[in-house]
Length: 311
Image (tube, rainbow, N blue to C red; front, side):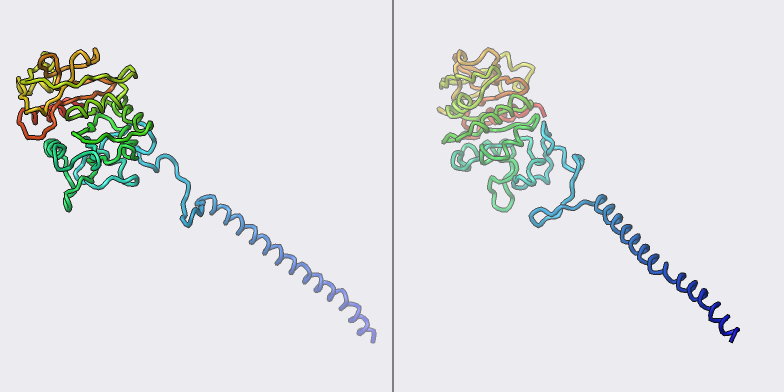
């Protein structure tokens, strides 16, 4: 009995020791679980910091720095892109890098695509679309109030051709400002071809170096038209010594109406039929023939006008 009592007394502390050993186990498990959960939350936060994603209108995008975007998207001047692969229709998404060296205004409501303007296009070598021969490649600007003019106004050392036209374009104040920026800032050339409508286009839309515009006086005079001394040292020195009059399709301006900075290359009886108007970094060149007919001497003058523009 004494041994039994002893055993009972001795067993009680042993059982308490075993129970005491079991108590910390659930607490340790809970602590370990909480620790793992905290680490998982931290890991998720780190992942979100490394690759943030934002849902916008069903699209997933990540913030990008300035190096991601093409150079032309940063504003400022941009170089024309004249590779043969760029003969696609201009669009706001694909167009800006594909501004051409030579672009022609081509609004079909104002410009006849089958008449004199088509002769100008052929002389300048501007291609039409290969499958339907329409004027819808990057070499043409149909709308003066388009986004295309905004990118064109930032171009440098390029040429915008105003062909013979029968109806005046309606330019917004913003478009007129961009057209003047194109000439004044980027070293570009506005090449105006034709008769009285071309002269009026200059008078109505171009501000000139002093900002007061032009008051050119159109006038027809019988030819031929003689090369002037001012042509020496320019591309026009390679033209014909005299340009023939083609019926009544040659219209110039009186030399008295030209501003003092103007350069007259061909004249007759105080009427200039080929001249340039320096405009700060750029220039306006006027060729006073509508190109109703293909005349070799006048064809050369149009091509020389391109050569006189920086490239």
